Amino acid sequence: MNNKTKLRWGILGAARINERLMPAIVEASNAELVAIASRRPGAAAQTLAQYAPQQQQVRTYDNLEALLDDPEIDAVYLPLANHQHAEWTLRAIEHGKHVLCEKPMALTVADIDAIQAAAQRHNVTVMEGFMYRFHPQHARVRELIQSGLIGEVRSVRSSYSFMMRPARIYRLAESVENGGGAMWDIGCYAIHSARMFFGEPAASVTAIAKYVESGADIATSGIIDFGDGKYAHFDFSFERARRCEYEIIGTQGGIKCHNVWCMPGDVPVISWWTEDGGQGEERLPQANHFRLEIEHFSDCILNGNAPALSLEDAKANCQIIVAALQSAALGQRVKLG
Image (tube, rainbow, N blue to C red; front, side, top):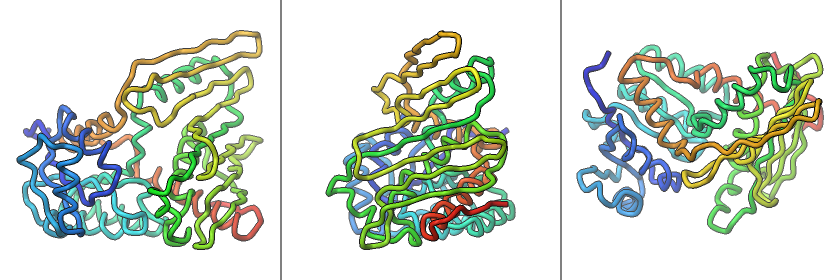
């Protein structure tokens, strides 16, 4: 048991996600924002002024290494560009920092293996930042499944999309090999949420994609085969109306989560139906999954608990993403394992 009551955080990057993440650290009951760093001169100070203007005591750095050298920081949140996640997670680990890395943790399973080995060597905790998993609505979905309401889960459909705005066009600047495109941005959510309801490892993946000139995918769809006729269907795009949902079909009915990316002011809605004519809709209390994620990770460090999302989970997700990209490129099914 750690005798500290608050985990001291640093943010390694001035990315747009700070709009949600920075206030979450400030509001978390067991966290304290100590510093933010960016390689762009003045960007860290500007981000702090924009998203947490009352936090005058927070230090700002124009150098990422300077933040890692700060002895008063226990953990870092890492929202750099996708292809930089593994490198800077490893650097943070070498400085003895715990790391909450924005998804995707890495672009290869080998990089996550290296992160896992380094974390064990330096006795620090690392977790991939899938904030949505900490919203209570998903625990409620699992409760309904475990109650036997819809029988045995046979398929999951996850759909994530929004129309790309000019301010976000940078997401298409890099090829999929360099972490660009819809797969690494929103596809990892679609695959992660679909995997949540299957206990078995995936057997194969089949995918198709539409690419832009840079080699980034702008829309991808596919199927993950979990064996015995159990499938996850994923679909995501930067050129379709906003959609952020999953639906689970069992042998006796189905459950739908209508808004996976619930913002703090959104009302979470879950609906269900059964083969015998039953149906229902539940509206759950509002919640901030960013704050809940920060509180969970902080609690893990302060009290020596294992995080809900393990590095094995990160590797399993990365393996399917890489296989899906390979399938789309080759035009054929890719077996796993």
